[in-house]
Amino acid sequence: TETLWRRFPGRAAHASLVTAPWPLPDHRAIDATALREFAALQSLCGAVRSIRSEYGVQPGATVSVTLGNVGQSLRAALRVEEGTVRRLARVSTLTIEDQIVAAAEGGGHAVLDDGTSVTVPLGDLVDVARECRRLGEELTRLTAQVESQERKLGNEQFVARAPEAVVAKEREKLAAWREQATVLATKRERLGCQG
Image (cartoon, rainbow, N blue to C red):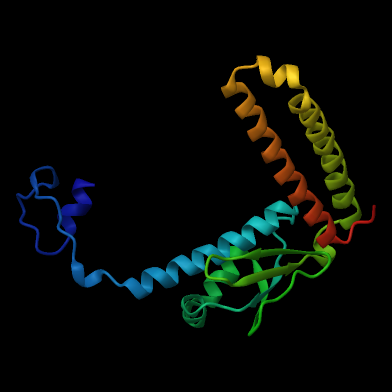
């Protein structure tokens, strides 16, 4: 690091990084618009990657992405950095619609903080039957846990005898499991799973 630092222009031959003053920020480099646009691009890439991961899309496979109701910052950033998004999120086709794009059956969907809807049709990228089975098994397991927890919390003796903190923790578990079950049911619905 010392050697590289000394190679910067304007350094004296005897100067040392160890004794140099801490660099001061250059306020000319602060650009609020650029920060908003970069954050929008990060959010989009993260959403596409999350959908890919959630549905087990192979890392090397490219996906098509449709954006709807695109926010101003993201729209401006895409004009300049669409290629970066395509590369980072492994996107083959990027389509922008003016209105919100509903999640198609057999596809992944996300909504960014700025209201932009992100839809990724999964088509041949995912074995839908296998994914439906996996999600169904997980939903069945989770539903059993929810029912068991409901019985436990419905037992007046448990609620009366257990410390308040324990009962609160069990209620939190139940709420989390219900939420997870809702998410799984929604995923199954989006994939067009039967039963």
